[in-house]
Image (cartoon, rainbow, N blue to C red; front, side, top):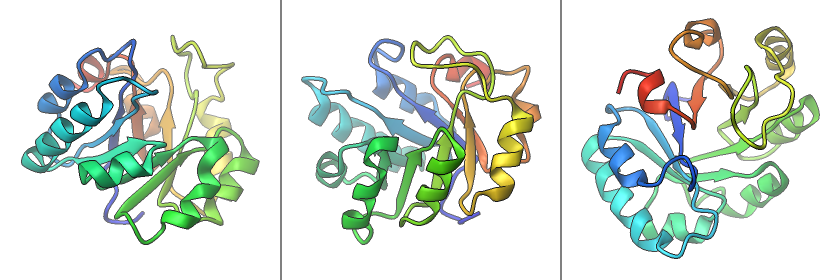
Length: 184
């Protein structure tokens, strides 16, 4: 696994993370923090604020699917939506870290052919996320990882009770309840 990758990635969501800067303040050094703004009106101010926090807290700070905002806010990189991962080719020299969502074996194979550092695959466990489908399960995800040529983060339904079950992946990623699940 590349040394620039943290073992924990925390993703924001406008509905489930109403104050992403406050969450960033609580993250331990070395955590990855992915700000997903989904077109929020205050996204520039929020991204700049999180970037300042990330430098102080020594977080790996990524912006979701918005390389222009990542550049403007001096983020470490971009987390691409699965449908946009090919755009990473254009930005490969612009950022220290780039990740993508990849929710099937085909997407993982495609991600490995691009200048990406890792892929996030979900949902591993049952999740409350409105976009989560039937859980992949860790056994099936392990099989996918063996064929993947890219580090894979487990995302979806990760909590304090099951986080130990995914220790053989690149790391864990969490949206809902990240602070409670990881004791931060």
